[in-house]
Image (cartoon, rainbow, N blue to C red; front, side, top):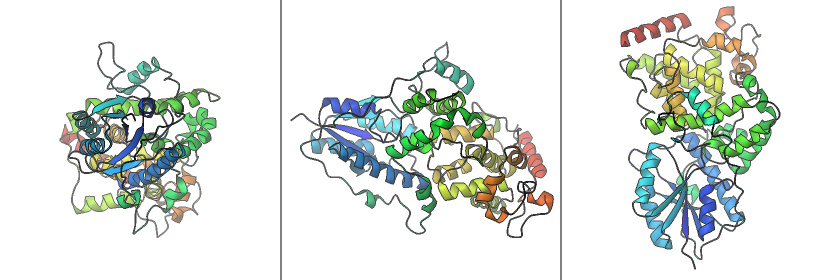
Length: 457
């Protein structure tokens, strides 16, 4: 019998439009394997919300594989060592995978390639990161010209179907038990809202896409309105590779109306990957050195403010609604993400890296590239970013984008307020005693932030 090949899965947990699976299935018996690589030096361990998602996504993928006569092999350890050992056990010499661009995964790919024939395929992005370049052959740092250049390569290839069959090996290697990995919360069980909100896996991703596509042409307006359900909610499915961006793109361009604004959001994922390909430490190092000397607040008072932000007790309804939604569901409306991030950085003058780490732990769609790029854009430290001195006014944003219904849902102690007072109860003398006083006034926070920026320069 032909020697088996290993299919190394990471953030590509699907069977459709899966180039690595297609190539492996064409060669012979396939052993799909997922390695929980948490201990490798410099490997960024997944946050708690992502681990919850991973558990259910792996469960779903294994069921899909078994429908095809295959199964998922689970192992823990350093990817290079685990795959080499699995190859010795099974007689495999070749490994197929989709290429990843996080710095730790690039290191892992080099480690695997040192002992095995590693074949990397593209498929997690619209185009391979690094392939869209300027006329001088340099990668783009700014999104807008990147978007224009990317469009010259669009549409992406048509998504490939699921292989008709996945050849199975004569003997399956031993697999660890998913339940033994401890990916799910125990006590307290904070994932009740997650279970109501999400259906991880390829089928859940397809359902989300089908639900969203009829609304795609209205995304340009709806994406800014927290009280409306206009977001695609595809981000965690895309992050874990349960659906390919090519599949999303082709569905969107067939939708009625102009889906350009939504397609730009899909392209932002590609842009973010291009940034971390150029700056692997972007999650902890400023893209611009101008604010390296900014004096971020620290100490007991700053810690108390940070905790108020995390728990949705800042006294700013739109910020508190977003942070409570995040804790309850593992997700936050995209407009509110910007407002909440800006509040931490500029109103509380707390280092953006601390906020990025909190989002990394609590978001089901936590993505190293997108998370880092978005936080640095808000902080004014990124290679393409908003200026630090442009300070978002959360109360104005709340009213402008009609967030009253959103606030009533996530800050129930304010649910009885009218449309005038819901955004800023203090201004109308309507703040309930159970709701906190603002931890800092907007004008005071703005002056403090501008002063810190002047000193940094």
